[in-house]
Amino acid sequence: MPGQPLAAQAYLWLLGAVVGVVVGFATLGFRQAILSIQGLTFGDSHERLASIAGALPPYLLILIPFTGGCVVSLLLLFGQKRGLLPETRTHGVAEVIEARALDNARIKPGTGLLSALITAVTLGTGGSAGREGPAVHIGASLAAMVSGALHLEPRDARTLLACGVAAAVAASFNAPLAGMLFALEVVLGHYALRVMAPTAVAATVGAVIAREVLGAQPAFLLPAVPNVSLVDFPAAIFLGVICAALAIVYSRFVLAGPSFVETRAKRLKIPLWALPPLGGALVGSIAIFMPEILGVGYEATSRALSGQFAILTLLALIGAKILATTITLSFRLGGGIFSPSLFLGAMAGSTFGLMATLVFGADVTSSQFFAIIGMGAMSGAVLGAPISTTLIVFELTGSYEASIATLLAVSIATAFSQSVLGGNIFHKQIEERGLYLREGPQRIILQTVRVREFMVPLSKHETTQEPTETHLFEDDTLGRAMGQMEAEDLDRIPVRTRVGEQKIIGHANRQDALLAYNRRLIEEHEERHT
Image (cartoon, rainbow, N blue to C red; front, side):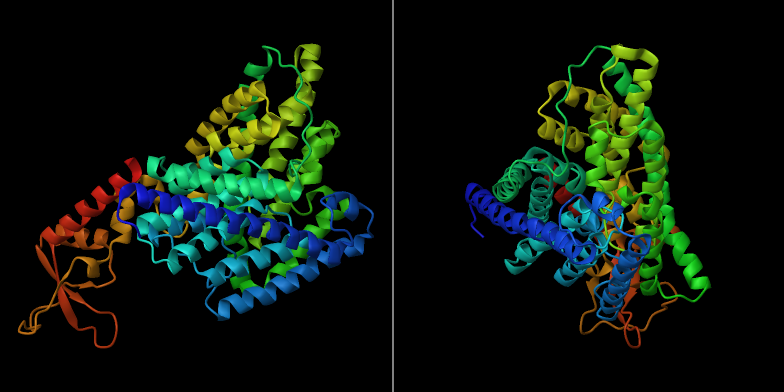
């Protein structure tokens, strides 16, 4: 890599453009794969899945997702046998954040490809979930492949990871600003200047590719934003509180569902890879009565944004979508949580607008306006990305008034929901695996630095014959090492290897542990602020 700072930055900009091209086309290919599978199973490859499903006999609405679940089961079993999906589930945004924090932005290419294939089968056969989260994982996986092939240092690899995420979001929504800020806000967790330029390049390239192939039309149809009255801004704040409550319910269902189903499956001795067919059949059963819940749900989202649903229908769709998405993800089918949150937000906002119109009459803007605001507030609260979602609304509508109202609503919704949940849905998913990334770099360093990185190896003339009741293993964390030294008031602890006879291979010193901690803390500070 070039040595001069400007040359090094230009090199990253070039790599950002390359990643933007690759991820832009990959995101479009992923979307086309979903539609192609939908064409094979439902007989039509257009986005209007609800209308297509509504014309089918009930038995097909159960049979198609069930068949898709059977295919997913085989793919999960394959992934489990090959070590690509050892936890028997697909990967998404949470795993990208985890890779950024813990694995120096390394993602197994096979895991990314298999997760994308499972998600394409799930959504193409009617599973109720999102495609943007899996697209983000695809983008991150491809960026990780590039950085791995070029042997980039960890800091640059993380920058390229952000480029892949930004390009995926930008290509999905034709929203380059939102794509860049989503990568910084959610995945990297900082806004360092050196990261912004390559990420912006990748997002722009991804959005341009999507626009050239698909045109300027967004994924769902947005109505013209009506004139806004002064009453609408306080109303947007109240809508934000409603969306916060809905985001809390939705997040808790999605977070609790997988462990609930897993516990009962183990009790019944059902392997996790065998769950998808049952989940598909359950989703299909709901679709008999409400086909709008199938797939990403953008047709129903468009109808809510256009004010085509009555209040009772909107409320029923909210409950059905939460249930269907929870089943899809809990029964190990593939998909993300972004699209359902847009669906739920549009339904909630439209309901609020219709009820406000009944109460206040002409003083309140139409339900379409509040559907747009609700869509942004709900997704922002769930993802923990208020800036990104506000920009998505702005880039899709071009309305300054709608963006201001969205910013009000999403700020309230995010503050309320995260104070109750203790973080966004991605951080909660990561915390279920014992990793607490929200507590800042200090906690991450204690979790990621291993004893082997700062221990003093034994010299050829040094003996290992000494009391070894107290010892560390070479793969123990820095946090465990420092905690044990503090608890037992030791300045030096023998280190063993876990393999074979677990021989002593070195010593961990308190001073070296503190130096390793301080060194990594300085590196983290420089990366986040330069």
